[in-house]
Image (cartoon, rainbow, N blue to C red):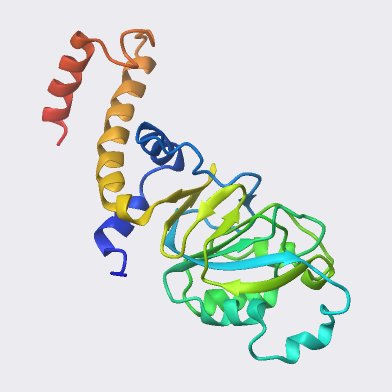
Length: 237
């Protein structure tokens, strides 16, 4: 796959997940927002990157012993160690929040690899440490138990479900204060371009509402309101 263009990446860093989800909805894509996750870290800017995935199934006590981490091919450790720069590690925990899917050491490894972020529909341990990081980190909350107590890592970079959303390797992941949205890779550039225009229009709408205009006829706009917007847009290019 061609890398995500730097222009598209930078544009997606300036637009909201709310805008993106609306544009995807208009295309018939209605299940794009990862359910049940929130930003745990101190990141302030948007998370944008290609998806690199890790899939877990339920653990089994005879297989999931601490000694498995000695195996250099253990999928969980291998995933954290191989996320490419600019990618987001997406972890499928089946929404099970009874154990961590990583912690401070593994998350720091992602940061040192210049990953764009981490999203897990499970939990993370060392939450206070992660909370001080500026790298975007999203999960369902904190949990102390290690991953082996609930999760068995099986696959890297395969299609997964994360927070009820299908995520394919290379999909574009965007996160902000509202949450995380998944953009099918082939739509990323056009969604980015439309998002800029949509947010410019909504900025104008906010100005109109703040000066006392009613919602009806302004959002969505009547012909008269749209004409006023075009005049405003021409003066504010």
